[in-house]
Length: 234
Ligand SMILES: C[S@@+](CC[C@H](N)C(=O)[O-])C[C@H]1O[C@@H](n2cnc3c(N)ncnc32)[C@H](O)[C@@H]1O
Image 1: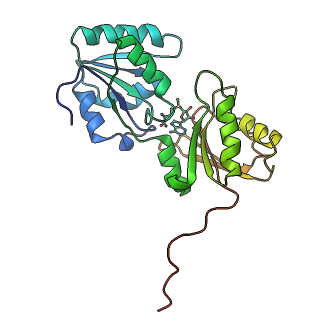
Image 2 (image 1 turned 30 degrees about the vertical axis):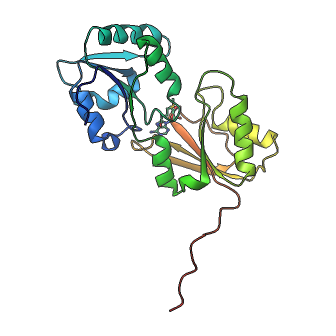
Image 3 (image 1 turned 30 degrees about the horizontal axis):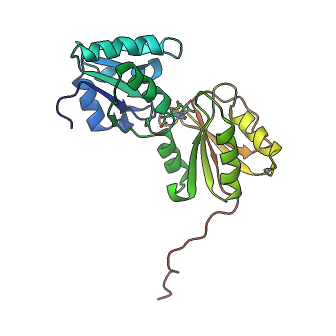
């Protein structure tokens, strides 16, 4: 897909290799260094060429590991840094870390997001849905306020929780505290594309402890009516 690259950031899809694009698979096969969080690397290990060096990392050592990858990139090795799902949803802080380590902007190749898979499983239309993540460092308050407005505007919300301090049960309780109806339906989907699990309930009953591979769908209480022409009677 791309010719020569020195370093590139690529999304690997939300888990199963069926959701990895052909182009990203090619980038991995052509890399000298394949870097990313352990869970992401584990998903693509079968594609990593035997001669390539794998650099795994976690939250604690990401700065130091990315500094090493950036130095190798400056030394002329082809590096691909992998992101879970699509980096344009809940991945920009990691991208910022990659760019800071390199000292320059880095191109991105999108992957398929868990939000896209959820939209397909739950049959919701992007146009009528807002995507929100709490899985980020820093002040969550503007994002929390935005979620209240999204639901008040009768839009669906696809929401990534933050492990472990703002999980689905915390989000649901917080929404109720802000005045959302306790009976507002909510769904939590886990391990999409791998071992899909689906929980349905209400904001009031959203109390189970879900894993960090969970994503919420809060549908609008009054879904938008169809705006296409009425069916012909003929
Ligand atoms: C840092 S965010 C990255 C999201 C990713 N960029 C995407 O587009 O899916 C990681 C969170 O995404 C959600 N997630 C990612 N893959 C998932 C999957 N297969 N099933 C359910 N949730 C998933 C989980 O909430 C997980 O903690």
